[in-house]
Amino acid sequence: MQDKEKNKQETVLTGITTTGTPHLGNYVGAIRPAIAASQQEHDVNAYYFLADYHALIKCQDSAKVHESTREIAATWLALGLNTDNVVFYRQSDVPEIPQLTWFLNCVAAKGLMNRAHAYKDSVQKNQEAGEDNDFGITMGLFSYPVLMAADILMFNGTKVPVGRDQIQHIEMARDIAQRFNHIYGQHFALPEAVVDDHVAVLQGLDGRKMSKSYGNTIPLFQPVKKLKKHINKIKTNLLEPGEPKNPDDSTVFQVWRAFATKEQTAYMRKEFENGIAWGEAKKQLFELINEELREPRERYNELMENPEHIEKVLREGAEKARSYSAPFMEKLNKAVGLYSLA
Ligand code: TRP
Image (tube, rainbow, N blue to C red; front, side, top):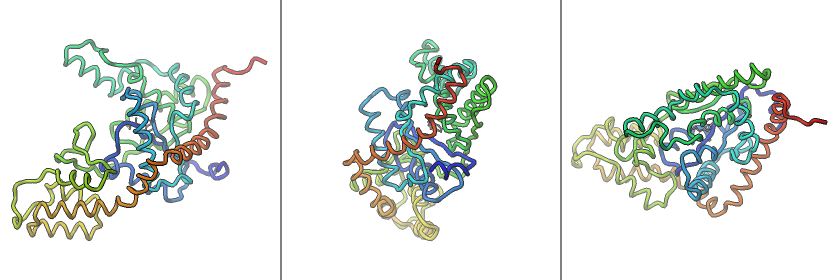
């Protein structure tokens, strides 16, 4: 592994916050493309991690945090993440990350953090509600971009695939890295956000973007009956069987397209024009999705029953991660003046 890494220039790194249960929108937009990438040999190092320290910022229900970590790890493994090509680990298994977070806290400007969107949104909500500006805002939320910078800089991540909402955090990580480098010498590569404009955005049950915060999601792995029920709940209009339907304003068709081949998409477009009944379109949509998820779902259920295996994989990942982070942290400790007196 060390030798394999030496020749690689770029490091792709991204984190998945362990709150909530993955849904079809997460699958289509982020998980499926990332896993497909992991299944090919690339000329880059790749680090994917479960951001469980980040989960604590959003969720103080310990059972939920724990369960979500298990679900998300099982999801990625069940879908075929190739852990030979990707270092897959849990953030909290790498103690160097919080160590580095502190170093970075000591060089990051507070003024920079004041400008972070997530923090500013919370302040604005407080103002609108007539509350004190700081009401309900923890230091975890305020300094969250510093933790994220540590995640990235710890492994010298250069390319960071994220959603648009995260671009600012990557810019902050660059800024913090530059400050550290300026004070202590050249230690960190400067990361760049990679935003895929073609990434599929899936609509939810009500036709808005599928998102946990809208409560309109279809969970990725659930018993067949429940999947069917969810699909039946997708909003449609009142057109009767036989009446032509417009595929381009239909959530059923939009979701279909995310799972279909080109030919299947063309076929369903025709069916819409021919006035397919909503019930029939949904039945076929269920079958299409179920076909893609059936095998992974079985593996998922097995993994969920067998957390020992997940744990083993994560520990192996942490070991690989730490073979990089531990010696690097030793260097950084020296750089800031924390080392043995004798
Ligand atoms: N904050 C990111 C999100 O909410 C998750 C994340 C945590 C992350 N640490 C990261 C992403 C480091 C990229 C790099 O989506």
